Length: 308
Image 1 (cartoon, rainbow, N blue to C red):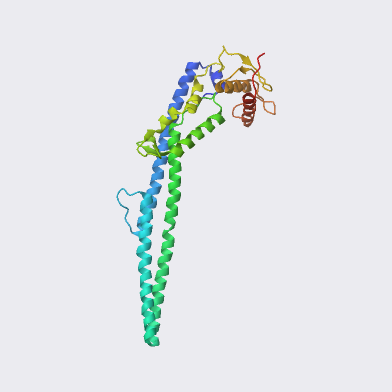
Image 2 (cartoon, rainbow, N blue to C red):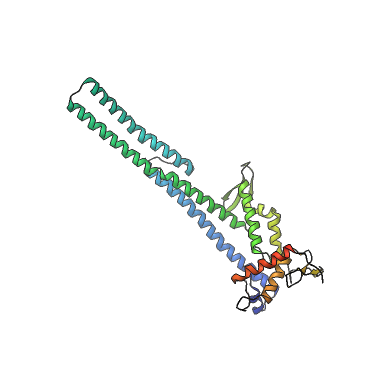
């Protein structure tokens, strides 16, 4: 968690002290986050196991050892329907045959009435079984919803465990956009699993190709470029570079400025000169900050600095 400029200046901290404090904060946050992520994954697994147990209690069909929850619920539903409905349907069909035979043979009204009542009772039983099936069927929908929620939670947990901490010299919107694009690309090409607490990426084309999710992060050039912003010192600009100014921007930036230099220049200007509508000093936590930052960032991206 980066320290604010105001806090650093008020406490008169040296760069070495800022770095040391930042490392302590990041380690503590990482430990808390690790504990939370593990609990979230455990809770999600418990929900799925609970759904499977409910199906077993309702249908009486025991889940096989090591059998996946999805396969078990599908098989239990099929066996339950076949065992219950097919049996009752056969009973109704048999009663109907007996009833038809009595009519053909000219049986007495009393005998016909008895067989008719039996046929009606069998039909009622069949309808009860159909109603029971309707109560069991939602378990399939429940599993589908739980499975989707579990997958989302698992992937969110996995990616949060390996997401690097971007320095405050990096534009938040740029960092979010590039990270989300990386996540989407990985999800399209890999299945995500957490094995012994380590997020793993399994190739969808070859399930035998497995790599640590953190390794994919380390190999992504755009993500790694964002993390390098923490190495920027001082004003964030190379003092040997030629400075220039873009039309509409009230401060100088290096010609051919890097993303980190551009973000740093905007931040420094707003912290020193930025004001709100009421004339008070603009701070990073103010809602107007994002709009002002975006305005100058757009001008710098679209314009070309001219030297003075």
